[in-house]
Image (cartoon, rainbow, N blue to C red; front, side):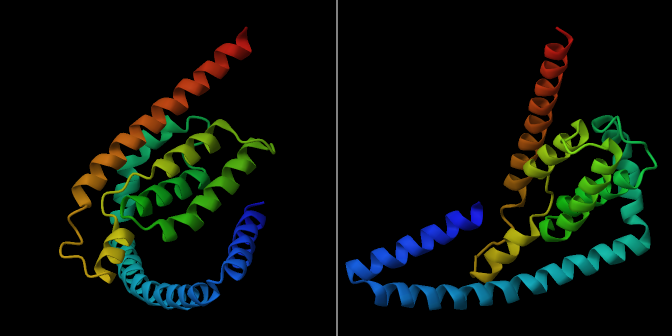
Length: 196
């Protein structure tokens, strides 16, 4: 459905430009934005490779296991129906750790694997309580170091690309706590409604 919406918007824009006589501007914008996209992607690749390498070093040094151990009590309370030693718990912890360091692209494959494991555990085609909670927390995306945003700011020659770290931390703490509260409120509301 989203593909149809994007394709429709592009077609409508091109047809409008043809009738409006601004096709040259559309062509120029297409090529300039393509050039910007390639430049930005190359800049992001270097930062992503750096952080992924740092994550690999942290993994071999045992820091990720230590972080996982640190977060395990909180995560097991957020996902009570997932057994502590289940692979889903490992993928959830890995996803949260990658998100903490602003590595959304690296966190995505682990998040997908976590969802697959939670679907296996629930044995249903419907989203389980754990799947909904995981999606809510991932959407709020608790981040300590927004590395992708810092890379974009560096790419566009920001005078102080890391000045957003503090505000990002405050914003993501607030959104994560709010997301968990809203998730729990809706869950308990549904439980009360089903009991009636």
